[in-house]
Length: 184
Image (cartoon, rainbow, N blue to C red; front, top):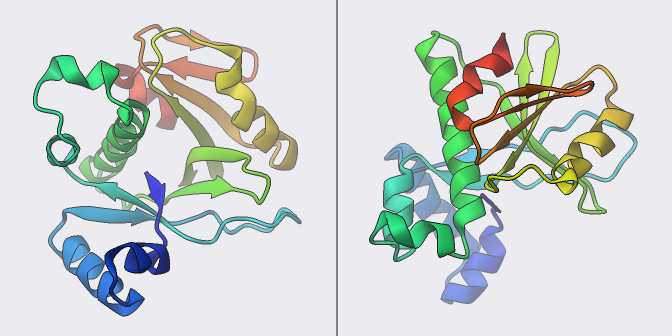
């Protein structure tokens, strides 16, 4: 779930950015990673235009991060990113299982306001914030509240590490087990 910057990776590895792009293309063609493109609709804001990189297999992701047991995951520094990857992957699978091509994006502006996942469903736009915490915190809604100001017709969802489903005045709050409610 990190913004993909081939030049930065190339500098770290001591190769050129074309090599990084070529190897990333191999990983994409092998269905190991995919790029989540940024949402480009012009809101008169400077937005991030680089894609984010995610794994198709969160088990492989955990292995590469050195996580060998389920008990290690809650304490790992990348727990939130792994959870975000899992939720985006599940939403993607929901679309494919319904015979639809997913139109999934993320959004971030130059002030680091961000929404983890945007789902274009026909004329509807769903904004999804993804948090691994099991207890709902008011900070979880910050990105969604900001995005609602610039895109008022957006349906807002919070997916969190808990399992309680709540319909609030502006938000639907759900655990991973209730993801199908996003598109209903």
